Image (cartoon, rainbow, N blue to C red; front, side, top):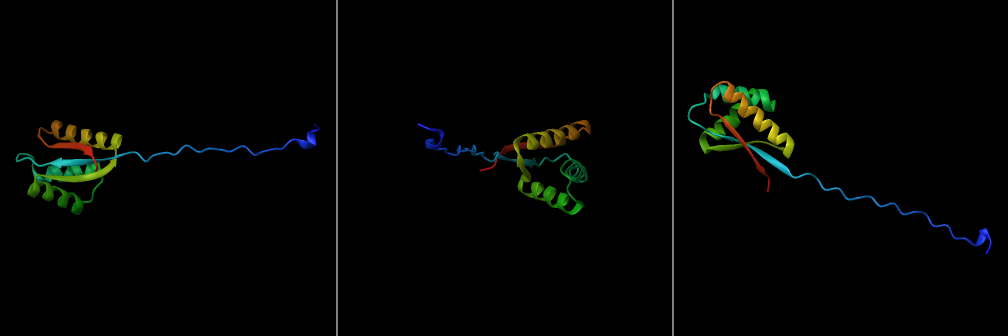
Length: 103
């Protein structure tokens, strides 16, 4: 058998199929003690919301009890929720943000 008889086949490259990371919701929980202005300030500082959007989110949480602030990757959601809650604790307010998986 000579080298001319050898069949050359191209290598097949397989790409692993990557899944998108699961998204998590950051939820603002209403309380009766934290001033509205402070809640709006936290939403602007931590979540980079404008004045109008922050006010709407705050009022929705005030009326309904909770409001989804943002939906993002788990690590970002947990970091933002912790940062916002810690900021409120430092100021002496019981404002709370929680995270949960998006369905």
